[in-house]
Length: 276
Image (cartoon, rainbow, N blue to C red; front, side, top):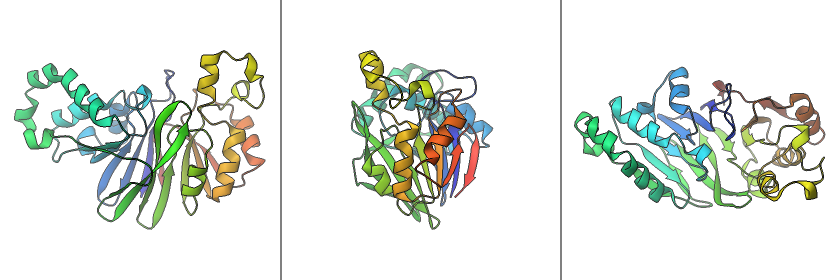
């Protein structure tokens, strides 16, 4: 199993971090988790392309995780995709994909994409999943876990198992028991850390003075004080941080996590590749 962090950023535009997305090579499949801004370019930089993606897993319906889905589909068809793509995600994924294709139907017709690849290859199968559902690949499987992304419900994480390895991807979440349980026995946990700066840590500021909208966002994500105990309880040996602001406070984050977690902590960056 090989993991490539295609995009490690947040909704905030960044010159160094594309939107959230991970590429996983597992068994004979190329799999994406999420499809944030700039992902088709990152796929090329990683040595592949949209036409080679077999399955896309969507963690939740926030735009920073789905904004380049139309580009992924159209670029795959334009580059002569050889087999259909499957999309797996939470409730509302089917309607979202249907509306997205409808929105680009003029472009699809103008490019004669159906003539290029055929109607069968342009068919997009969408499967909506919830906690505990599994997807079986050829010698690998993915289990869905429902995580706690504040006001965003449902929000999912995914557990990949194959090649005698186990990888957990949290999606967007606050620290939650579901991640800790799922990551037991895992080789790697990729976890969001949107609050990776001291001035944005709810443990260090007066939350009552934070405007409600900002507070709602902060209470929907994870800070270093919350992440360390989750990784420690799971006993996972390697923790990779993603969904990061452009300039995280690495020293403070490492010091804070180290008070409760003694495993390896890796700050993710775009195009980082990890053999699992």
